[in-house]
Image (tube, rainbow, N blue to C red):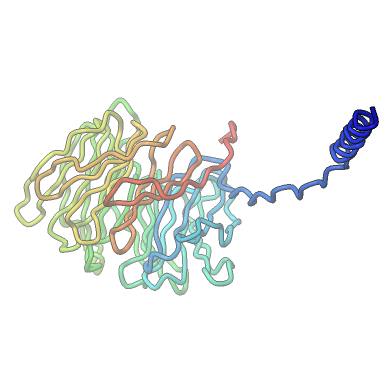
Length: 348
């Protein structure tokens, strides 16, 4: 009996001990600290560009802001505010120290200092909307185009108008320079969607004289880009095709077929071996320049692609979309490296 009573008491003590252990107050764990989400644009991203060293990139949006980003981290460095309308175009200066931007309703072209974020110059056009602006290859000039058929060359240092290019133009959809800076090239088309006759026009920078007009396509034409050797150009059309044209031979070399929507943006890779395109079919495509064959398609955006760009070394690709996001891709593998997602504003 003593043994049984001892065992009973031992079991009761053990039960009480473990019961006390289970009701000990739990130590509260520290809540996990999550990283702050990246604050992207609140409107469609219509223009993106890498800096000359590839360490940064810039974006322009319908939300009236320009944003500077760190390529490696994807973090925002600075927001440039000052335009009162949609941003249609952003570009770096050749030395990477400045950014030029064009706005719509405010009719302004602005030059910004990268280091300080300050506005350096404002050039105003007598236009309803400035559609495109960029620096000349030597950084001395800024070229701008507008919806009211005007192309103007500005002195980048003084902000004064240097030359206006005259002709019977339609609305200007894009502007660029030849690699040597001797030619001003732009695309234009009628404002009426019922009477498309898109053209590419070439003017001498030094004289302002028109040297060539071609071709005349009955499709929208939004983007033109030079090969690094200056002999070839590419341009995207409203029927979803991209044309490769030989300027020296004065002939169309080939047509790239694959997109199912208007092509808004095209560019050569830095070495000229590849072509990049962005379309209203929500995709980006990479092509072999020599064969015209499609290398790969980059999918992930949920809106039209307005702008695409190669990094200076050709290893990465940047895209801006109507879905308000910016995406950074690996050019060789097609892997998505980063996404900067904005917030949709239905009013933009």
